[in-house]
Length: 249
Image (cartoon, rainbow, N blue to C red; front, side, top):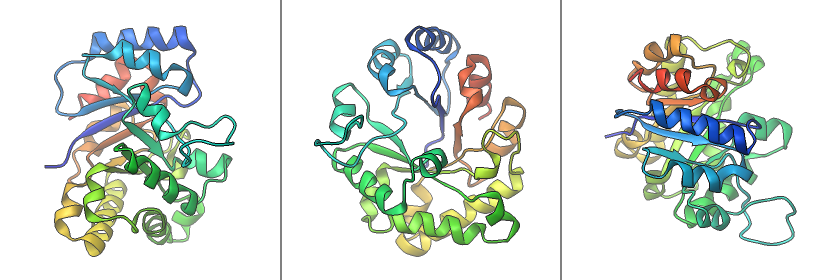
């Protein structure tokens, strides 16, 4: 059975004191939920966040990592370094990494391989821009992003892959794909997986929606049969809003 997941991507927000304050609020809100609850603080606060959330039911995950194990890559963090501070899940391929840091499908394939080699779980992000949606090319773009970065993997590797569809035009804009648009794309993604790896693999991979999910729309989006949760941006910085989304299941 597919896991239901709500992951909060804090992006470049919250210093150490702010991280502790938000975690305290989150721990006060967390209750038994059908969904796995994750938060992704900035890298400098991962160790503190990991220790602060032990036993709370909240998993601390990373926003990014490098594909190299070590070497002359100033400012980068490896899978082993993340594992050494208790982090077992990493977000890769977020649209902001693609746009601002020029991450390519080839680079992301190497990052995915490095994470899986260390036994980590990957939340792999992808999605089309507004021009792709307007021109009707959204399925081609999304299909190629998935195939180029992931379809060299073995079937068993997908046990540690979570997919996150994030229409770029709906991130931080206040725009949201309609629940029907989200479901249509998620169904296409699952069929793309099934065509390559079979229904057994496709039916077990969780596919999250990431694009301006809010308490007001989460329940309707999560009710769709191929939407297994959300990768949440701005709303994850408010404990009450975040857990309203978690409890939308």
